[in-house]
Length: 492
Image (cartoon, rainbow, N blue to C red):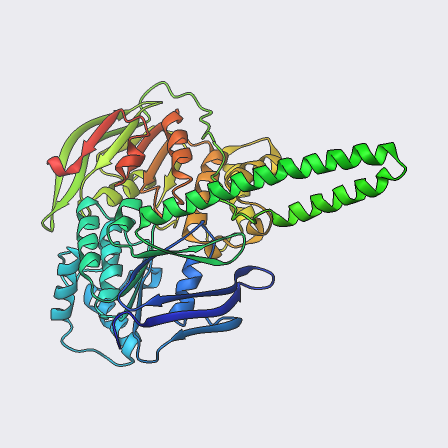
């Protein structure tokens, strides 16, 4: 194929998730070979669904997705599937290639080593997937797409769980990648390094808007357009109100002036028709507080030893950490050193060298949301959290909290497992508000969350009056939160 020719085209594509849940409405756009495109949109808008349509996992209800029969497509997902956790590295990659080409692949080890170099990962091919950290699993998912050497690479939130070094390597790979890439991400600096254009999926109109330029250029274009259209609508609103006021005056005077009043109203209607239908901007969640009901006199969490992993060797190191009420601990270290393992052990109350005070209610935000029951509806999940927290506000209080996190109507009746990853994150925070935990354990809480929500979440965590342990690789997020102690596992 010729570089620069159209590789992918949507022609009037419409798609619904079940009855009366439209995702796309007569969407049309094209992507040229060799370009690198960012796919933007609010949590739950349908970005991952768009990827499934491109990769032929789903078929459109109406319209056509044009992509050549010889064009290979590979997608790096956001989260490792639970059934894949039992595989070794070699079994995982063999299954990826077998599913793609329909036959068993031999002599796969050199191919694994090649993609491991691209994603800056080093591990035994016999190591089980379940033993990898969240950041290492993110690199495995990326490598599973790269090993297919696709003509079209689809990346769904590829920087989630990656440390700074991992994001740097991924950025460099994409800058030099010669084929076509479409990326879903909320990381502005990462996107700006390689984007040629943006596809914006509007959650309200169900349409795709296409822009040319790097990420910052496109955001500026959108903001400038919205500002211009707002000004025009404000001017028209003044004129419309003036015509209506004049019409009321003339109608009140009666007689022949009623005809003048009628013309004034018609003119107001004409002006209404001229108003620009502005795309509704993504709404941010409402400011919220995670309540702490109990008063704890002594330390809520004490840590005397931690287990770290360096160069595939485990060691136990002594520390002296005591967290009281209103104290926040930042846990630092590169991917694979043991941060997620430590948080899991702390949350379970089984961490060697750590002790949580008796009766403490723990709120745990996991990267894979496995603390949520995916078979529960959102209503059932939030009701369960309210029972744990002992709230006396009843269903009305629960629905009020949910609405603050943009959880309303149909979403309350939806199973948690059917939500987008970003929506699961909002459900997790809504549960914290209802559970009233005295200890928060947060493992990469910015993952999958719309960038408009992050300042609100950071503000709530900054004001949180319980004890908190936080892991995050997003400096801008950490800077907004009060940190009282830092435990850097890489210093041992």
